[in-house]
Image 1 (cartoon, rainbow, N blue to C red):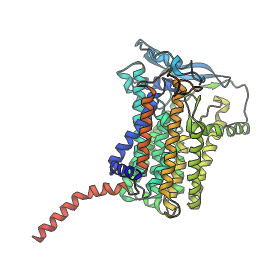
Image 2 (image 1 turned 45 degrees about the vertical axis):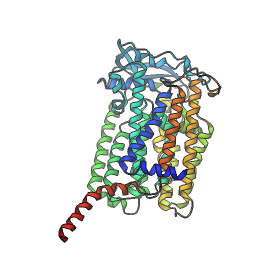
Image 3 (image 1 turned 180 degrees about the vertical axis):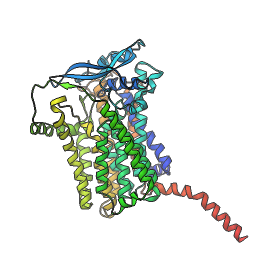
Image 4 (image 1 turned 180 degrees about the horizontal axis):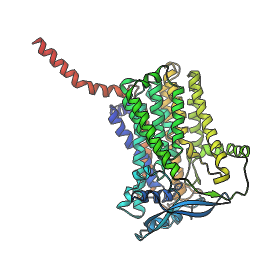
Length: 529
């Protein structure tokens, strides 16, 4: 059976172009299943992002400032929002989930239907100062549809955008000689939260997926340099990096972390060799221009929200408070869905952490000192960055940090660990392919558990069994359809991981060299004759 899967996978991914196509379909199915199985506005801040997307594609990049008072952690906060002129049904999105959000024993059946009034009114959004790049990519369905159809189409557009990025990361990972280990690192980096955010209208998903491409691309360039693959790797980094720095202002920091880490773990002489290449300077220039554009937007669109502070926190008190929340941030980063009211099963959280920790420990055993320092530096960053961010902001906007904000940095952890093992560990030291397949199978199972857990929460409520109770709420096509699609897509992802250790790029080179080879053979025949 295993050999049959290997042959099937080898046929599906024989060339880089075919691999990209197969990976895109797999990832689009995974993110798309979340798109269809998640109730309207049941993902974090989705109403604001939907309104922002609809406004941007209508040319409303800016709008009047609107202040709304709300309570956050029992403290009065004045949120600075942006007004937009849109059909009236967009205004109803904000309250659509109020009957079940933070009430996980209730299904989504209590939610009212999405309206369809086309009367133009002012609708405000808390995402009005966000860079318009992402919203241009996902907002276009609102120009020819309305109501829940618009929301589903926007979600699917977001799923396609993210699937394309992840597929590019897979092609880069497959260029390694011991690719099953690197692919395992990539699969570990793409946590269930990544696919959930990819399948809804939220720029956090693109932030996570573009960072995966940046990590895989930069580390491949400097840890496993190959001049024949240089330009395509640089192109992927340039595109993904430009997206990353223009999703949210933090993206420039995430790109900087990846660049510094990659430079630290670079193969001796790889940086010097890279600096001699004109394509590398073009890539650096493109990233600088993209970063400058992102910075200009961020500086010219400040957030004027403010908090009525009841208790002033000093730096040490704020740091202690955030450090105490680190376990919660870790859970939120991997499998706490919805509006942080739908935690996935504990088995998903702990096994995912265990596999990431296993890869890290193996990398520390086999890696060089600077590679170990780079790996440990990512661990420090995952903990320290939220602390630094909240110490600066807690007295102005409150304790607003969530685990999903650090996904772009955390993605580099299993990717770097897997690459260190692929590069440094002797092939005879451990049954590496078996390890990759076993870990990949575990990740597949616990990812499916998380999807099923979330379906149960919305279909019947978290206190009931999805298998024995009739559905109170159903997504389009019933929950069983999307569960089956998610299971099939995860199975296909595992098949790709099981492909025998052979560089896919060899097939591409053979294709590219076939025609010159035939011409040379013809010339030899002419000379003989």
